[in-house]
Length: 440
Image (cartoon, rainbow, N blue to C red; front, side):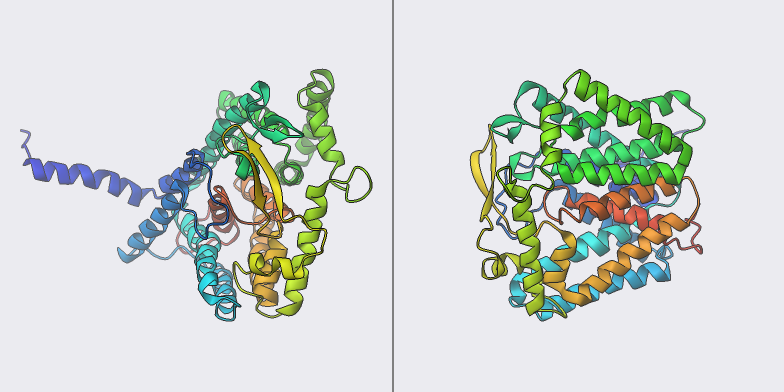
């Protein structure tokens, strides 16, 4: 005979069920973090010290959930090597903050660095407890990419995107003209995740074909994002992923991809002129066809190197680049880049970072920071390449994208938290704690 619970007790039981579900499978919050980057946040003041997005809140919720789980007695899922590399990043950021030219400003940067490179990756690592958790997070990357890619493709085809060469054709998804790199990053992650999932799928041919089709579709919005850094990073990452999975498949995929590009761009003309022009501009830093966005980026790198020369050991401090830029920059460096779309009109976006993560670390955290971050990235890369298993291609592909993209970009913007999730996935595969049974 069923026994009716009092209303308050029934309500308490209903509230405990979702909480218990999250405790049992915290990867749901990791997946939610990925999907919430698609929530439009409106155009933001890029000079503000702190931006809090729904994805950031979800990531902090994941950190809190893992902390509660540990307090309830669950064994620590971090291996000794993972603890060492994460602690190294914390120590380097702390030293840079204490010795900063402006410690109060650097404190917010320290908190952000610890969130992005330590707390969220470690929490994602702890939340991935089996292959199902990994597939859940990778599936979230694919779904987010399809959403943003669909919006971006529509923007290009209807001429409602951000301005590119005076025309509103640049695909930016839901992120707007002030964050033109965001959509290309989300689409790239989804493309790589779809490839990895398709290669690992053996029992369901229909799902395998659907994943390959999703990856093929995402090539178009990536192309019309006109993001050179994302193109290069995706090309390198996809090559590494395919070689890691199957060398012969990598060769076949390269041939098929080249043929598809010829048909789409050469035959149908989809984005062909803009893509070709954008590719040819990568090395254009002088002469009549000089691309100022490229020359400005090289000048920003030189500026970061000059700042590091004045603060070689611990750097100038997190968030100090913007304060020291003008006193160390070449005279030809532009003060801002142009941004325009139907929402914001025309705006000048200040250049507040060197657009290179390695130069950013060097200038703001010095040699100590380079050693710490280099140790983290190298440990993850070597671990992913060395460890066999079907999750390896996904982990190494996404990690390679981040490491290559860091040559042309740094942290900042709505999608920064996705870097944390990727580092967590890579750490889970590269630095497993064999004592807790999380290794596959």
